Image 1: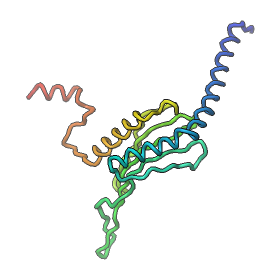
Image 2 (image 1 turned 90 degrees about the horizontal axis):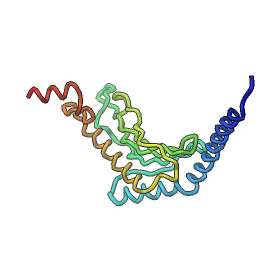
Image 3 (image 1 turned 180 degrees about the horizontal axis):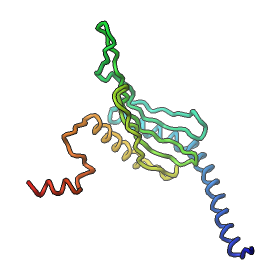
Image 4 (image 1 turned 135 degrees about the horizontal axis):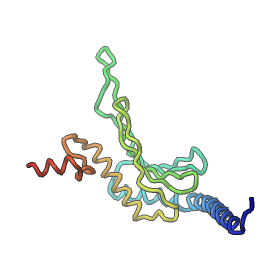
Length: 182
């Protein structure tokens, strides 16, 4: 079996691309540490203070290079209680949701929404991924848009009503025919 120079050239290009990706990971991690993480904390605190949103903004660093900045709406009484006997009941705690900027293994930043849920009442929804960014791409206008999306999603969760059609299902076989029949 013989290989041509072109075969080696293609392999060399792929190796160079691999090395570039590894260098990018280090660059992204450094940018996160030195600039993006403190900037996110500052922007989130500034924006939520401006609109008087009760929340906390915290840094999580359980694993090096898998850190996160989390805007949390905290926990509260759900208003629901589980009877445990003798006239006693156990309050069910509601987790009010969070907006998370999570550093990925490759240094990119994933933005996601953790939906509210009530402990022992159904299963929590899986997080909704809004986007994945190279750290230098994440600018203040995106952060404001993420906050708006977060509040809209949390509000929709809180105002759940199964009588309303799902807004994502406006176009579809059944709905189109129902509208023509009326």
